[in-house]
Image 1: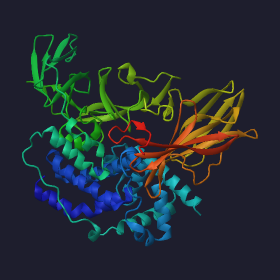
Image 2: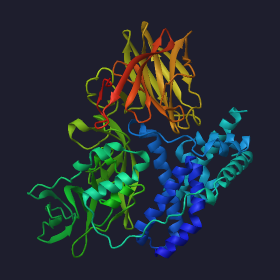
Image 3: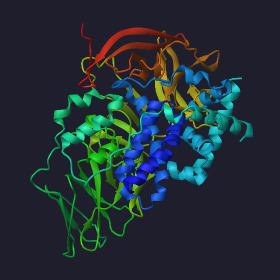
Length: 162
Length: 444
């Protein structure tokens, strides 16, 4: 990839990737870090990409992995670091969300990381099963079963809050 | 599933995503493109890693900055013998200090290749190519440190895999790993090794204990990439200096973090993995008690069965975790030598819950734990405090509750007393920030 190509990708995809990351980690600062790191990886590994058209998918995978790492660090940081703030976006951002949306997002946040990833990629990114499978490096069957199970758990949690 | 849930989910995701606007983001800063690739010194590697980890402020690394010089190979070349080309004759592989790899085949042919920053020869593995590959370890490059998220505190001992394949004119080291998925590092939190001629790898979080179970992956060549495939759980006794291997049924693999400095009795941290199902057996009050946790029969549920004196008690766990509970642990009742409880660990999301069950009125019932008790694993006070519950070798439960950076922690004893949950303070301990595995009395 030429520097100009990376710059165009950055301009075109940065915001949507940050939004994807926010949905996975619910932390704007961490989300921006994950996206920045994804572009850094693209710059580093870009020459290895045989198909420049694959760059958006590469970035998406890198962002999902970066978010997963951030969540893992959030859990395992106990001995060495101050944990990330729960919601650095502040109460205003939460407050303006409709109550119903907050319930859904809270239930989503209680799912396992893989389940949350599958649901976000499917219902926000609008990816197909095959694209999600490629992004997460799992089989299509695993995508299907994970999504089905995650929706079931989500529904249970939402019903439990009523 | 239900259309209604899907619609609500889509609407909520869209609403949350739309809250992030372009003007909310930091100023755009395109990562600099690289000039010609060149090797960096270890000092620079360390700096890069520290910079990448700045968000999590690993002060330990900074303190150890000067100790990251890579150990050198001994003067004598590393050597191993095996059948690389599959002709039934022994081939000899050597790795010199310069990184030169030489294979002297049984038929007299000689092929040479190079690893950039040699550390050691690991073995000969079948990775799916026409010949077996030669697996060496090399010291990580800057890209490896970034891509593999190598634990910074392990940089002075970290290795990454170099896989050389037999080519027409020499040994080829063009195999690409998928750093997002393949574990190719040898550090305190990951390992690769050759077993049964296959290249296997595993990773785990936290400190490496003495004996424990790991989820292993086999690395296989597909196209020009080594792709990991899950091969299930293996068990590892690191004290035996052998690679992870099949778990012996019924054998306990305890997680033992080792000596805890001057407070070994206060910190006998231990977790339990039993190879043959999630069962724990123990002697309590002269009776044999067996607790078995079966796989979820429906989403989020597990079934706990406790057998004692020919009687079986059964309970269904609540929907705390999408994967159900993990391990059953027997907990003695402090006021009743014959009494006991079972602690279940639920991993979920960013937290883990511990539920206690005890037999009361002839039934296995959930023991109520006060809502404000710090019990389980999680964060409190908006992330300022982290608490963590574990079980000691006598079965007693402990919880540490400390500041986020972990230097000072309040230790609590979690006890079952007459079937009820009680928590009492054992005092404060402090962690040595330079050697985080060591604990001691807090300085006055």
